[in-house]
Figure 1 (cartoon, rainbow, N blue to C red):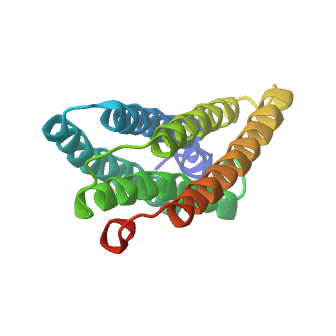
Figure 2: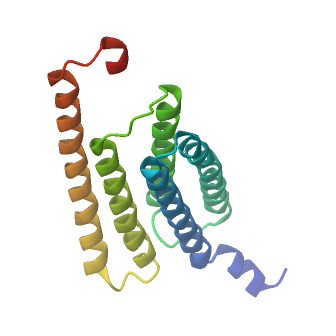
Figure 3: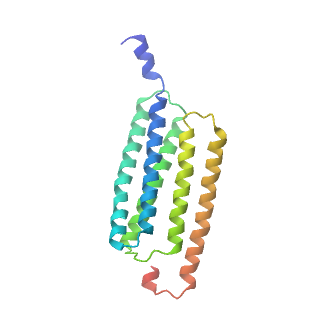
Length: 184
């Protein structure tokens, strides 16, 4: 093994990490789009099929996350801090996990009627993913820090809006005379 090959083994594979993160957010965007399509689908059978298809997207996301961890183990030098790469990978994986968990609950609880709160929440999920995509794609250059910062502010704003929407939805559940079994 020549000196050049030895040195190359320790150089960061920047494109590998950035490409994997970009593939993850692209997959998250597809999952968000599918989730919204499912929630807006009036036909119950079609909605169930769309919700069940989100499991495939989550598995794809898991594969990307595993690949990031493999690359992390194989690269001595990384484009940014190892713990930050690990935390970002886990955070992005959590987004896919939460989308899948939400879809599974809709299936498990046999939710037939989609209310406005659910429709609004899925729009917020999409907005959050779109902001996340901007932030992740800008990591490659780190030249447009303003865009990254604005995307992070947008993500925080979406989180706050989602918290408020959840509170309103829960308030509605307990303020109306809904049968206990339906409430559960």
